[in-house]
Image (cartoon, rainbow, N blue to C red):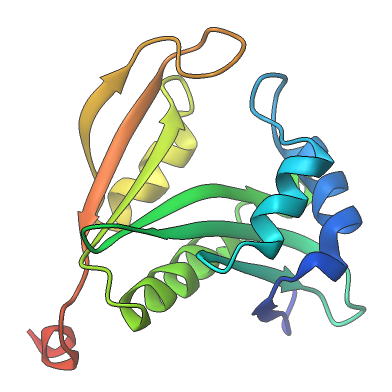
Length: 160
């Protein structure tokens, strides 16, 4: 277990490292090309966080956007396959949800592969529920599940 990791904002300077990690994390049909990642990391409505080891190696990332109607959309969450099952996905999701709340979002949403049961279990533990099946969502034709979660609207919600 790694004792010290840090969660930091991810910027366009992290593009190459993020792209390489994205390629290791996702199957064909789910990865992003460099142009898309560049667009996301330079978009003012996008929030991106990375998790780094003490040697500054990125082992996970999360990218989300603020959408109309108070929605925070988790676009991508990736943890290096060699570093999974250590709580990094949960830490990244908590970081992006906190950022969504800071930007006034009241609901978080994400899409997950219908057969990615490990990710679905993580999201369910974090309070997400499946609201819709999205047929042929991924470019390789696989279905996705839309999952949503209400976010706290004031600091007092954390005490309930």
